[in-house]
Length: 174
Image 1 (cartoon, rainbow, N blue to C red):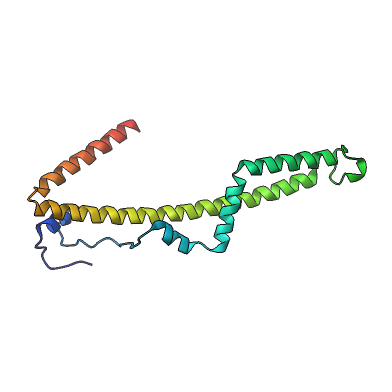
Image 2 (image 1 turned 30 degrees about the vertical axis):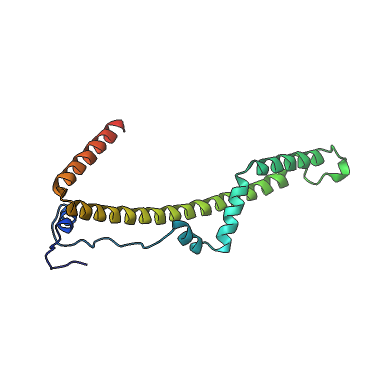
């Protein structure tokens, strides 16, 4: 939303100039109104998403490792004749076990990707909320500083120099 009305508030003029152009446009940002990132995200999750999360959590646990170790040991013991030749159903090199484990790996990889995609969406929601909070804080800070008679232009100049110094330091470290 662009305004043709001149900005009268000195603090708002400082905020308007912060992007390098004094154009009377303070409202370039889409706001993402949310009280709680967790509550917002819970509303997006469906039953199948919760199931995928549970499977991924289980697959990433030591219990999963122990169960599979026992399962493989029993499978191999049965199929090498340790319990009796009559019980063998998947002779060496254990083609059925290989196929079952391959299918399990495919599904587990899919569940992990589903969970990662959802975590990415959650991070996007969180970053939008953080941005709105930061924007709100900046606007309030500038208005409070103006009301207290603080030279907002000087403060903004110090902030720009600090940001430039930080960026150059990060570039040197990279």
